[in-house]
Image (cartoon, rainbow, N blue to C red; front, side):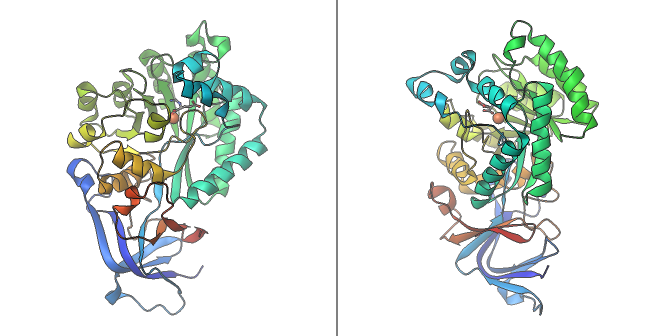
Amino acid sequence: MKPLLIKNIKKLVSASQSAPQKVAGKQMKQLSSIDNAYLLIADHKISEFGPMDQIPSISDAEVMDASGRFVLPAWCDSHTHLVFPETREIEYTDKIKGLSYEEIAKRGGGILNSAKRMQEASEEQLYNDASKRLKEIMSYGTGAVEIKSGYGLNTESELKMLRVIKKLKEESPVTIRSTFLGAHAVPPEFKSNPDKYVDLVINEMLPEVGKENLADFVDVFCDRGFFSVDQTSRILEAAQKYGLRPKIHANELDFSGGIQTGVKYNALSVDHLEFTGDEEIKALKDSDTMPVILPGAAFFLNLKYAPAREIIDAGLPLTLATDFNPGSSPSGNMQLIISMGSILYKMLPEETINAVTINGAYAMGLQHELGTITPGKKANLIITKPIPSVEYIPYAYGENKVEMTILNGRIVYS
Ligand code: NIG
Ligand code: FE
């Protein structure tokens, strides 16, 4: 592959280089940028960059002119459920009429509805549908994504989902991380004895997932009406044997104790966080756990908004992700999430960009290879349409500001 030299970049923008792992608190307001810049890609990686007056002359390079355009790291979406059998607009009117997420779930809708369809779905169909979704999110600038199981709810179906994710990992240019979410909901046959389902997750599913090396992380929906702190703790403890670090669905529906439990088990992230108060913020401080907010789900379900400002102002890092799934967030568009983060959660434009790049990478354990424009990192980049400023990215909600997505040094969307 020939080196690719991008020249005349209006602005090259990335999290500041002094914070390669994650950015927190006041640092989140900072981005580093170079006006009128070049960037060189070689061997699928970022090789070097700088101001145009220092552009190297490379005889065999392909040259691209990015006049008027910004270059940023491709988005890192650290929380999705984008392998699913069917969309669920069937629940939509009930939702609009006022039924809550929990009420829909109690009627056998929600996650259980997807689980029924999942059991009938073929691996091939799931793979083809998910590939289309990956293509779509690439067109909005996503370069890395975490995908969860959790619509299987029996061993066979959970493994089926994870094998589909594994195949996507092997074949898609998007960098993918896989999470085992067997404890997403209690299936109807265990309704009278949910602990028995937890036993099944621990004694049957986890060993299989471990044996086939099908997941990077483990997740539990630790919330009112789903899984308790005790049940969550049992699963996370068992998962340690298989080297699966937790990423927890926590505090979406109540002060569930999920955040504290995540921190206790050194979770890589705790996600949702609508019910976050002083206790939860205190638990997150001095931890390595990344708080992740999912604005799409709160918007779609009309939930109260997680206290993003309090979290950042307490000196913590923050990530935004899509939660792309058929029930509570049927969109994988990270640009919309950036706008929501800014408009609904009062995050500054720079904070939202840090949240979806370096901090998103951290929430997938990918901060050393993705999330910033740094020599040696994978060349996962966005080239925008001609835009006036960074602020324009959250401001112009609904418009696709991405003109080209480059993943592993190759153009995958233009
Ligand atoms: O992250 N909160 C739990 N699980 C998903 C919803 C999944 C569904 O409704 O299908 C979420 O929002
Ligand atoms: Fe989720």
